[in-house]
Length: 262
Image (cartoon, rainbow, N blue to C red):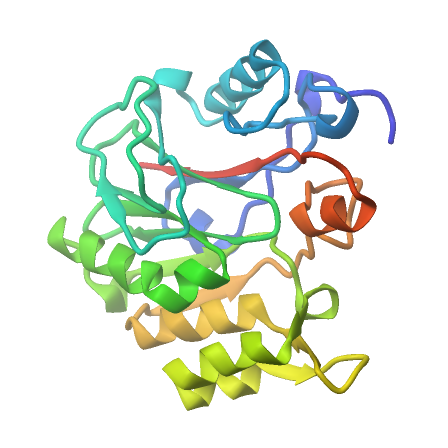
């Protein structure tokens, strides 16, 4: 890895679906942060063991890039649930438990932290409603996507008018699981078998998380959805990865934030 990137190197991934919706958004990468070591770059994870001062500075830089301050960030204490919180105003550092945030209030920065799980940013431009979702396999299977879409509806959004983008996450080529993992999905919905292919051994499978998440968005009635196509586990230069850290026996890993705001 090179030395930590300067502030000017903050260049979040954006997508045309959300740009056309007229919302501020970004799937932030490692670029542009001040953290060092295992967390080198823009680590925004308050739950990591990184230097708290570095994390605070990283979050300040991210908020500034989104046109706000750290107090404007509405991001949950994530627990791999199906809970969506509604942010009616700035959270000013509060982090209620949950895994999705929806808002119809301009200036609120809805955020989701990930490091292999799938971040999803959603927007209904007509209604003026946005949401950020943290969807690991457990949350995606447990209903966090439907929960977020339902919460957006309660704020006036229509699923058919909503666009969604799945950001950088672990891709199928990097996501090996056991046969029991596949069984859990098929037990919930037999159609989910399409998101698994054989692994290197008879009892191993490769799981397509972004494909599964896109399917869930379709089932929730979202009008248009896409994936950025980025594999967090395979691209160390740009992304933090829980699985990569685990494979290397590293004690911790950084977290990236995906953010959206009216």
